[in-house]
Amino acid sequence: MLTILMGADISHFAPAHGSNKRPSFASLCSSMDVRASRYAISIRVQPDRAEIIVDLTNMMKELLKVFYQTSDKNLKKFYFTEM
Image 1 (cartoon, rainbow, N blue to C red):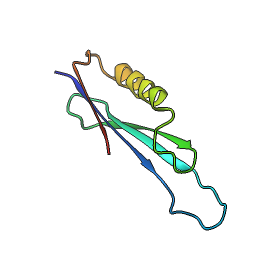
Image 2: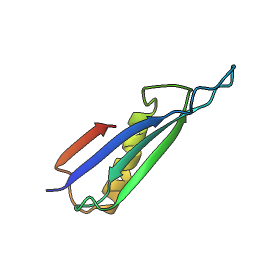
Image 3: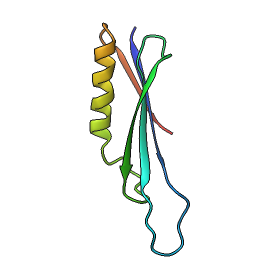
Image 4: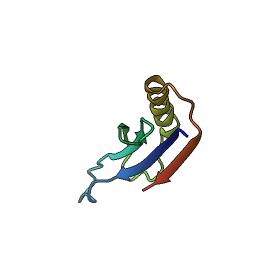
């Protein structure tokens, strides 16, 4: 049974002194094969301290497209976790 594993996280710089705004980084990682031994990642820069992944839909579409291009089987299960 072909299963895809996805995990997401957001990283922030340490709080800056003064008015310097620093971006946050959102990442989504996804398995790409039956054994879950190959992975691909999608990364986005987003506004400072944003706790919601702004472009999650497009990131998932991007990784699912790669998954289907590299796999000749149909997806049966989908697992997603926020880290």
